[in-house]
Image 1 (cartoon, rainbow, N blue to C red):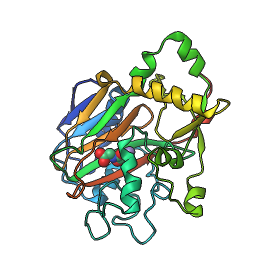
Image 2: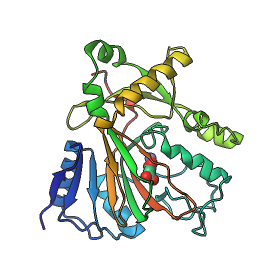
Image 3: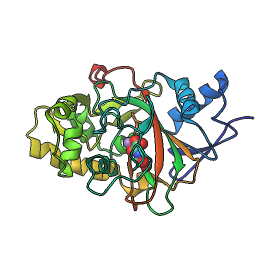
Image 4: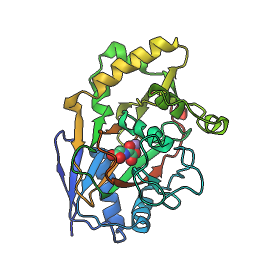
Length: 294
Ligand code: OGA
Ligand code: MN
């Protein structure tokens, strides 16, 4: 089989045909997908009835797996899935939908804010690989926005102004905007803010992109209200409909995205219904602040 990638609308998302992700990939297949990711940034696969083990094996073609610890408020021992599987479902360890007032549910509602996965970690994620094991037919779509196009659309003056800005990212900030502040001292310590550049350069293509996220709460050296207002405007422009691809899930779809160049969010859905989504995350290789000023 040969891999065939066809552009979706807009064309930073591509639909992939001619590959079975449950089997080990050849070196050529892995290279073709990585090249596809560099060109597109979001790749969509259909009909991939994959197990957790197969999903982890597939993900390892692109780098190390990121540890899921520190990304949510689910206590050790309460997890539904094994190591390296990020549970993006609305389910508890017994596969039942979480109660309306369950703090894990309220925390996870933050996935409806535009974000880049793990931008709150000192070394943020490279790719996310999300498998739709049980999907809902109304809402629960995943929207993506292209931060390369968003950067390109800025005027020269703005580009120059943003070039060397450093932002602070934390789950405390994204959840704080939802009024979710019920956190223990240990959780607050885990969610300690980290610095990230606002403009990133893709290591392979050299293209610049905006590194936005609802996890941002500060721009270093700026008054906080000014920073938040500015970032709110910038995010609004960067996620304009013309720059977004909205994925309507079918069971066993698998979607892979580059967190260095895209934002995403899930749309609201009736979460008394089961939505079983499982994510593996390919770790990044360096803090963005180490990236040389371009
Ligand atoms: C994620 C995420 C959105 C969704 O997996 O990182 O934000 O559609 N998921 O569940
Ligand atoms: Mn996410």
